Length: 278
Ligand code: HPA
Image (cartoon, rainbow, N blue to C red):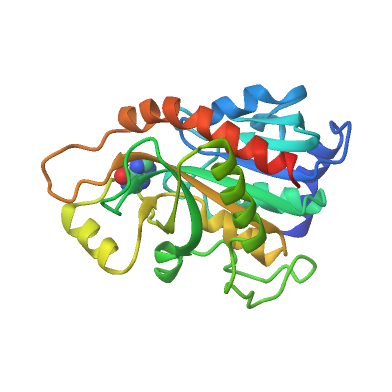
């Protein structure tokens, strides 16, 4: 696959998914590292392994199952990505954005993007959920944008607005659901780095200084493609570890996956509540 995606390539992938659809999905959901358990709550599910969708990036990371789960959740037809691919795995940025493009071609107008993230805000703890109110596109500022290359005019504008990436109405809904269900919900700014190495203490002091609350290696490219195509985005981080500002403790992928076990039930309750109120 060339570095840039063509509409024909996107439509080939979309057709492979469309052929298996029983109903029109209304919401797309991307599940982050260790958060795949939510897909098991989907009822009447059709499963499509990513390997059966042309051009679809297959995750090579432990904790990412690698299939679409399409079915019913709280009265909505959802298309859930149980696992995602990241830039650091060697995929191009447009490839990382392909799943969102496919959702756009399937006329899915809203996406819920989740991730596991390290907390840069010292008030946050592992297990917390954080509503993403905005992001720092550090990876994009360094030149890595999924929108680089010929613009797909059928999907969105050359210079898409990013003044409100994370939908305010959906954020309000998430706050209401969290308050009613007694789920603690933090809020803040997510910063995306390329990874795969975790941050040095100096990196983290820098990220804190520029206003980040949580750091991870995903979500921002997908949210950027989603906004380019006019979709509404709800972004939720599951805080899996405290970023190590003091240089005294190690950050490990095992820790990230272990925190997922605590985060998943809360995330399921939050997402179910949001879907119920749509
Ligand atoms: N840093 C970057 N990405 C992450 C982290 C982290 O501490 N935890 C989970 N994803």
